[in-house]
Image (tube, rainbow, N blue to C red; front, side, top):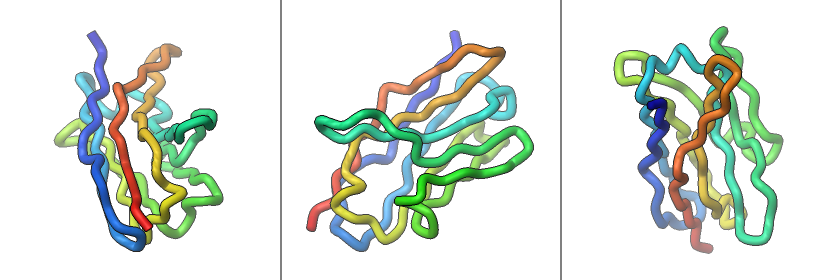
Length: 115
C-alpha cells in the first residue's frame, strides 16, 4: 500500500520558520511530480510547491522566495522549508504525489502562524 505521511506542523509566530516533512512508503523518485498543497478554512485547496523527477521546482507566487521544496532520496522524504511565515500561510498542508498515474495524498499537517 502506497502511503504519504506528513509531520512537522505546528504553531509559529509571524516571521518564523517551520519545516514540514512527508515520508513515502515507496521510493520518493517513483513519484512524479511530488508536491505540497494547502487548504485554509473556507478556501479551496491550492498548490504551494512541487518538484518533478527532473528536479524542476514550481512555487505559488504567494510563497516564492520564502518556501523551498526539496527531497532526500536516502530517507524517501519530501520537505517544505517555510521561512518568513505570515498569518495567511495558516492552513492544513498536504503532501501529494503521482505514481503510475495515480494520485496519492497524505493526511495533512496543521500549520498555524500567529500575528
